[in-house]
Amino acid sequence: MAGEVRVAVRASDATQARALLESMPRNVRRETASDPPPAVEDACLSCGQPLVAGSEACGACGWSFAGEAEVAHVNGPIPASLLAVAWSPISSRRFGLRHDAVQRHVDWCRRNDVEIRGFELWRAETVGHTVIERFEPATADELRALAASLVTEQARSTYFSIDATRGIRRSEGEGGFGA
Image (tube, rainbow, N blue to C red):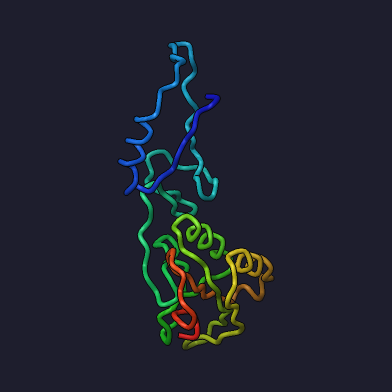
């Protein structure tokens, strides 16, 4: 319907959002039986893939209206939907992601007020990892561009260890890769 507005909010804010919407004046136009039903969005708001009716989360990226569980690591939080593709070397309490999972992580960070502050490129070793290069400070856009530029052969053994923090600015020397 023309003029229809949809708002996505975190589950914890749903009651407040409903109260705000109900306090707004209603549209003067009345619907009639001949009006077509409003279109139902059946695409994920994060990745655009089709949503399966009745499912609680997007099968492609894990996004849901209810939010998503996350796991804390030294280098920042990671959504539960990426745990299966994350690598955490025995010698580290950090996680790394292959290039094909970086975009999903960047999107999740943006939706959840998590700031990307930098990243390392890792090469996986039998035990542990080797830091190939450090990018700190670095932005989410720089991270995304580098991940997209890796060629297949490089991508198989390269991981991105993303330094991120939730909605606060760290002071110089606090956290990050040098900590």
